[in-house]
Length: 528
Image 1: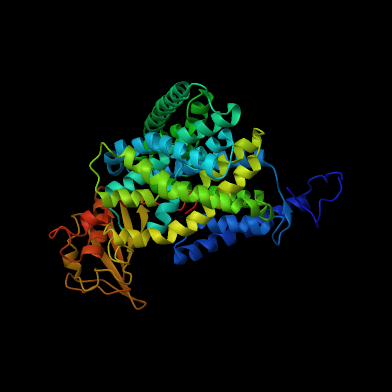
Image 2 (image 1 turned 90 degrees about the horizontal axis):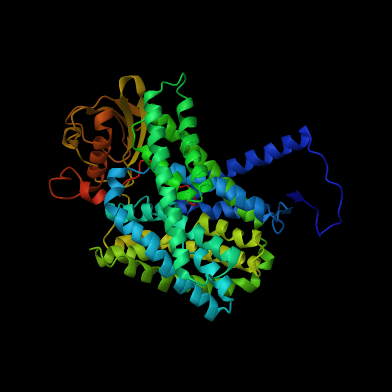
């Protein structure tokens, strides 16, 4: 990567890296991170996934932007992208609750395998017949855009509570479908269409089996070791957990299995193992996930050359339209045939197939392998992801409410933050009551908190006081709730239920069942 004043310029001797250059690089990186962090606030207000903002930062820094930075190293982008995906999948796995995702595993697995196959076939056919791509390039495009990104979905649905089955399927599908898609893209990019399709199916099955076995083994051994080995400092536990997750990826990849599936499963086992100093570990992993996605998207934005995309915009829109309106709905319909899922949830699952970081990164694989028209493939994928994220992202909350799968606007936006009380084996929950919450007008005693949890302080209009059981809560109040470790999840679930269903939540079948699956970690990792 180098900055040039304009034009192609002439070859010149590379200048050695000095401390001054390093200081400049650190300044640029720090400024980019600060801008990216500030962009999270902008995206949260607009309802758009942050991936678009991060990509925009990279494009603005690129050769067609104000930064005039020329960057065309697809191989370096692919390597960094893979490393970032490992961190993002690890962070996602650590925050996945097994008891909530387990019922959705069969349907999610079917979507990640059968659904991907249907999507690849339909999209590739459209790319071949409608925009005149050769079959090899068409299959690559079909495979590249068949991977969904749950982070993008949850970033726009975080204010809309959904049934546990829908969110569980979306989350598990995104964790599972990266693996078969990567295998397909690599196979098509190295050898083109295979003569015997069943050989490719067998290879995918074998790699997934190896990756799953290694991921489960590494995760179980890592959790066992961390529970029985006392490290001298609490700060070492987060490092050890992330190192174990990376070991799972590397071992899976070196064994010719799916490293992405291995790291996700290993992290999920670690995340459900009740490890020591777990809140610190989650915070550390979340921070790494943010850095990984910021760096990845900015780099992908730098790799883009906007002035070269003019001829690829219409083909991208055509392929994206087929993918969104035909391939994704058909893949959901076919793969979920064995499951009793209401049509409303199937419709939402069809529209919620947002694409994010993975397709753009996978689009660099044919570039690295020298596939003809690989630059065109990258441009088509980039335009498709950006345009259809702009279309689908803002409309997802509206569709969820229209299908009556989401609660009232603002009802689920109950801000809860948790601070660990390690030595007391408890948690201090900070609960903000937003506009539209049905907790307004509820007395403290009517919250019916589980034994071991209590509201200890109320902050109202800048003043704090200790509440009585008859204290009536109001919009804008902030509550401090102390909960012991065993009832922490139950206390948070109850608070969210009352926030949506009011004081009678649970008794009238509202609130607790409607809140559905709530992720206790920030859901902005590959495009949030």
